[in-house]
Image (cartoon, rainbow, N blue to C red; front, side, top):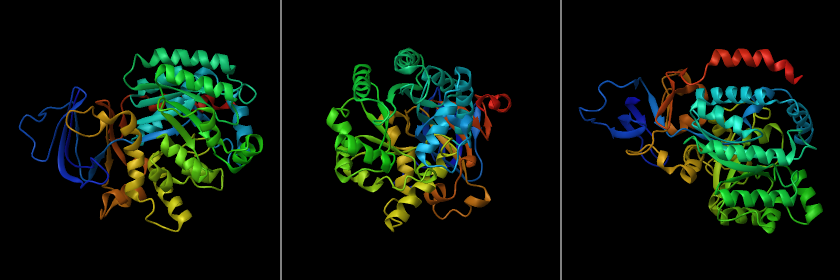
Length: 430
């Protein structure tokens, strides 16, 4: 497949000057040429041509924490605090069959493609099913096989969930888009033995490990009452953090300065979810500036659509910088450039540095259309992306050299069929 992006603006790095009137050639999945004075051989007859007024190209965002099948639970329990909300969610999740998980993942992938998201770190049950759908959709997936006891959600129990993990290990070998991960739910829902077993599996298979941690003040207080220390310090003490595997911690909303240093020293990836945090009213704000300064990798996630209620990562960027600014009374402490870097560059830099927009790299490119009322005029491209853009402004999406959406038309999934089936089967969750 040959793809030509013609006369667009290009953001190669968030701190570098934006390149004007650039053409990008994609041949056999690779970026063969980037030029503002293209050679005569630059794809005279491409399979797909991407051109138009005010098109902006940049690496596609990675949604670093979510639960994809929960698209089917969108709006099912709103306006409730976390633990009350969780009771509602866990009750409905007991009804999720394999076919519903597949359907919810299709809906999620459709939403992500249409908002220009190029990859996702997912944490859920039946990742062998979720992974197949992600592969078919064409985006990248880091697949966290959930470990959660049946007393919370009856999804087969820990032994069955580990069997699903083994199936996942086989699946990822068949796709360049997929990476396996193991995902014990959290320090307060999963016992120490299971957490350390997950660490052993991650070390053995050389894969990342995902976990929720320090999401609420109540969770932290319970940890301090039971163990004498907060959750992340406890994880450190029991040997959760290692040079390998790479740890991805979701939320980290209520953490101490000591825990910030632990996360920084261990180069942990912090997948924080500001919209979900605000909606569930955690009361705290992830200390993003301190985590970045300490050496942790900060990345942005939406969380699941049952708590967000969207997978639009562009909207998440706006909320991220605004909530930090408001919390610190300082609009410069976490700038538009910072949050854009954390959304489109940081996670990718850890796991897929060969997918940045450079000659010789694998082609992962998201294209935004700025020729629309809410993105004109353009005094500052990065400011417009973070503070004004929405997922619906994505014009085209290329992942692994394949075009997944062209001029707002999704090419890898059947939208009408997916939406019809979702409407038909929603009653199964009541």
